[in-house]
Length: 119
Image (cartoon, rainbow, N blue to C red):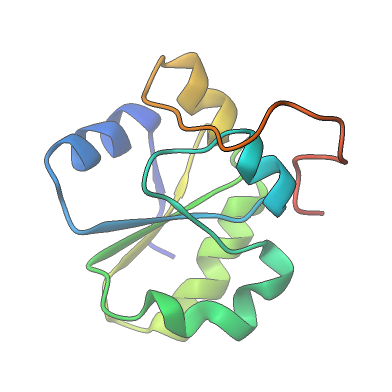
């Protein structure tokens, strides 16, 4: 893992069309309720089996609700990725992203289908 990145820094990278892969580790239901545009949903429990999907990205940013579980996810991805790019965690998580009034996509109406946190 190469550290943490702020919501503002991530928004700047996305706006600049940088080669950044945003990996949301929340449940599919939480992801459907709202997520960072163009992010991919790979729930934390599936990450070890799906980490190869991230190969080739210059920069990977893991995302969770508050920025704590994504640190563990970034470490996991970094251990598989080796030196093939930067792997960071979104410091403030989804909550920090939304507080910064950044772009947001939603695929489903809000429901009460379990927690947003991956564990």
